[in-house]
Image (cartoon, rainbow, N blue to C red; front, top):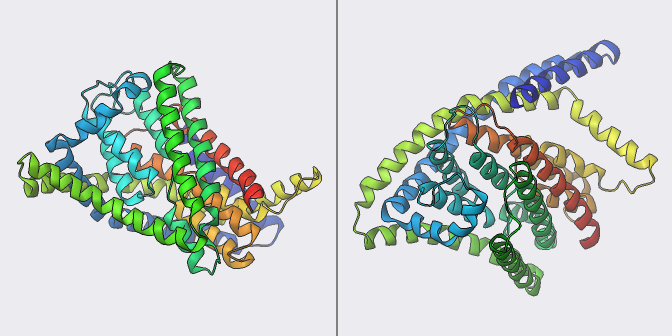
Length: 408
C-alpha cells in the first residue's frame, strides 16, 4: 500500500507539471518541483537531527521507567482492556507500559515525549512480530490509535493563535477536543472491525465510559474558566505534567535503588540509533509530499472541492481551510504552515482561521507517524493501518468542520 501511494505522488505530480508546462505556459513549475526535492530532503534530515536529542532524552527516562518497574505498574491498570484489543501481546510484555505512556503523552499534547515513547513501543512489539517487514495486528492497531490520538490540551495551536493576534485563542479548545475524540473513536472501531476484535463487552465499554467521563470533566473545567485564563492554565499545566513525568521516573528509580545515570545512558544510546534508522524513511515520504504540493495538484483539488460544494448549494466558507485538512495527514509542518497562512490572510479570529485551527488539532500527521514509527523498525507492509488511519483522519476533519459551524 505504502509503495503504491509513494509512487503515485510522483506520477500525479509529473502529470500535473506536464499539463502546466505544456498547456498553461508555466515552465517554472519544473524548477519549483526540483527545488522542493532538495529542500524537503534537507528538511527531513533536519527533523531527524532535531529529533535525536529528544529521542535520547525520553528513551533515557523510559529506560529508567522500565528498569524500575513503573511501566509494568502502569500496564497493569489497563491490562484487562489490552487483553481484549491486543490479544497477541503477552500481559507481561514491556510494550504495554510503553503504549500506555505514549497514549498519555498524546492525550496531554506532549508531542516531544510521545514520539520517542511510541517508537520504543513499536520496537518492543516488533520483538513479538514473526514477520520482520510486515506489521503485526498489534502494531497496526497501535499505529491507528496513535495517529488519531485524542489531544486534550492543544497547546501549540493555542500559542500560534495567540501570537497572530486572536482575542480568544482558546476558543477552539472544545471543538478540537470533540473532533479529535470522533477521529479516535472512528479509527479504533475501524481497525477493530478489520481485525474482528471482540470489543463489544462490558470491560471495553467500562474503559470507554471512563475515558469519556475524563474528557468531559476536562472540557467542563476549561469551559468554566475565563477566556483569558484558558491558555495560561493550559500552558502551565502541560509543562507541569511534562516535568512531573520526569520526576516520577527518577523518584521511582531512586525508590527501587537502581543506577539512574547508567540506566539513562543506555536508553539514550538507543535513541541515537533509532534516529539514524528514521532518516531514509522520512526523506522518502517528505520529498514525495513536497513534489505533489509543488506540482499544483493540491491547489487544483481544493478548487474542485469548492466548486463541487457551490454547485450543491452548500456553504463554502470553510473551503479556505481545506489546504490544512489536505496536508494534515501528509505533513505536520506543511499543515501548520497552511494554518498560519489562513490565520494571517483571513484573521486569527475569522471563521476560516477558526476552522483551520480546529482541523489542525483534530488529527495526526498520518504519513509522518507511519514513516517514523514503522521506519524505525524496518516495516514496509503496513496492512490495514494506513486505510484505517486515513479513515480516522477524514472523520476528524469532517467533525472539525461540523463543530466549527456550531461553536463559531
